[in-house]
Image (cartoon, rainbow, N blue to C red; front, side, top):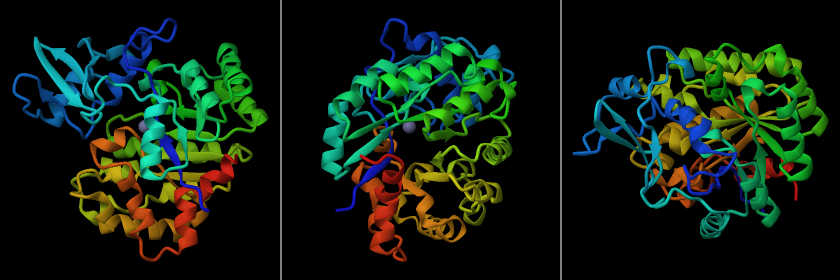
Length: 373
Ligand SMILES: [Zn+2]
């Protein structure tokens, strides 16, 4: 029986609560504020729920330049019912970041497992993005409790990943707590105003340790700076340079394909095109891509029935091969757009050119090779 294995899900305690050393408001909130500044969910005024322009959204959430040094104080905070809240010039605003059903902003392992059973999902990789907090202990307990269901990705402070305390942190997460991969977001470079990239020599001790531990890296090209698409493609170039000099490390590009979201408003022929640099990157031997297409085309009435996505999957197979494609849902974020089960429809029912074996590889078989039971 083929395994259905999700490359992208989240467990987290109620966000924003004080959790000792792992305080959301210490560091994570600033990154969160920056991370959502262009978010397609948009920002609404709390008084009348009216949507503000993307320009105004960006202007309120960030300062004159990119990076933490220019981040305005807008009392950015976690609300309820899936909302992030903040105050600018005495006016309250919110973003419906998660589905409204996320009442107290919590995704416990039991909640995720109930969702997985309902959707027919056997296993899931828990991505460890800092917007959810420093969750080493929390996620460590999740994967210890449900080792056959949940795979955990470690987290480090990417901008100082080569320093001894971060190396120790990774070792502890992998060797003591049972994490099986590491999540590496370039959004972390926000903390040093983007004065470095993944090829910075200070990170070499980190990559050596990753290779020694023999764990995959799940990459997030998360700088999100203007000009968005140019910066994003430059990030993929950086990854390609990195890939050529770290050929023994297995890698997964997450949030694929981000370009579809960034090019919203462009003609379909531009928006749904595979960027040349992405193809080049994914042709590196140990690279795969997580397909989160339903959220990248979230403005479609029903993304699985957007035929541009079928074509894109077909192009990916022709260009880089079926064995490099891995479905990822982004639960519970997923449910602000469609249900967990519907995030599988494109690969399980649509894409008529796929054989049953190919469907099984995209929806779990390929990921299972990385994380066998
Ligand atoms: Zn996510």
